[in-house]
Length: 390
Picture 1: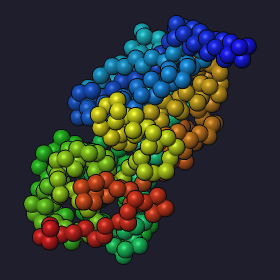
Picture 2: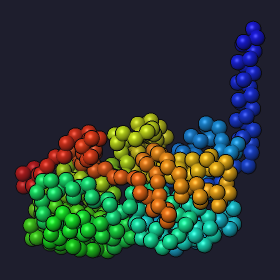
Picture 3: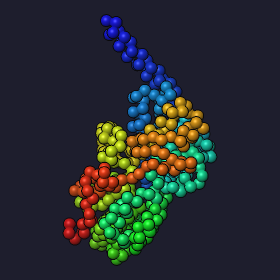
Picture 4: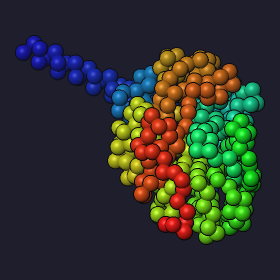
């Protein structure tokens, strides 16, 4: 009887503790989200990942005895709008913590606001190292630097004896930085850039670019792309019959919509990814399952950005035991951590030094992890099958 009473009392005390925490003033986490505009689909997924983190944290109990609440606004995929809204989050809404927006160009603007107010911000979906080349001390990256995104597929291409590279990329911070990394890595491997072409991010006509690729006899096509341009590029390559031995693009191929739009034409296309559920990182399958239960579809890397960014922020708060900006800045700069997204460790400017990317490939209608081989779902399907043989 005494044992039963003791167990019941413990449950009552736990419930009282949770209810007390939930009644406390929430810890408010501010962020802008691309709910509309060019990055709408990707930004929405990042927000959903962050919201799932907040929900999980609140179900576990609280942060410093308080629930967590996301305070967010639609930045319309516009850097200036995002910067103005981060000013509002800090000065008018009085948020306690900051998560960054999606994309490098928007983060470039938002991080200047965080720096001016000396307010630490965990940058979620941003990869351009240019953000961290300004000597800022309040922006902390969780993704891998964009300049290293294509290292793994270019290493694989070298192993296959490929030397002729067609580099195409959009005119935005992230793809420009990807292109810079490709040039450096190609030079290191003794490869020749037979195409080096930048296009407007709102371009709708890729046929000329595809013809340039075809006429160059490129063996590998490397693209700094998002979703719409990656789909348009593959369609244009099919139209002109351009069929190199490898096609590897950023962002687009990692999304289910890429396969939905291209159907069987997606097969063989490779994509660089910051996260996949089969990548042998903690919580991956559990997160993917619960994300699908909540939102109705499988999680992509952009959802992991949001969740992982929340985890890094949470770890810094728990380790310092406070919301003090100076303490959090110091902790985020020094700590080593492993989130859902992967390893976290930054240099003196907040640039990520521990995170690495993987490579997936569309095979028979599925996104499968192919590199590194230690984590692969399947071997690389090489070479890319020419359109005329499909």
